[in-house]
Length: 126
Image 1 (tube, rainbow, N blue to C red):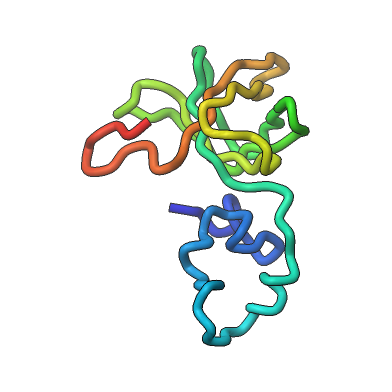
Image 2 (tube, rainbow, N blue to C red; image 1 turned 120 degrees about the vertical axis):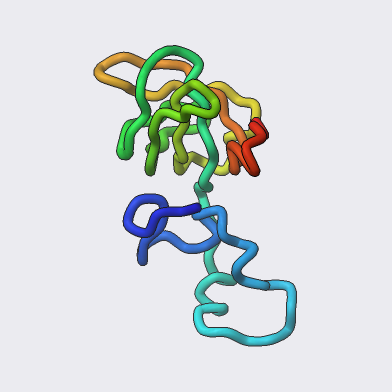
């Protein structure tokens, strides 16, 4: 689930927050904000990250990708997965399965890009 103020806020649209399912742009009905969403062409999206090495992911850590820079929006240690995980806003060209570099305490650590959610009903999905 997205945290308001971390993973989304008034400056980030549902298209960039992984919440496109909350707005139906295919249906003919109108809703507040529809023209603004239709006029927007997002350049970034929200993805999950699983850290490959020891470390802790937190909000606002820089993410380096081959397609440009991004930033973690929230992160923590997952006891279920026994590793650090995070949500990050990255360029659209970054794909699930790619490896990116997250800056953690002046070191760049590799992280795998995954599709959230990480866990559902106690079962690890990534």
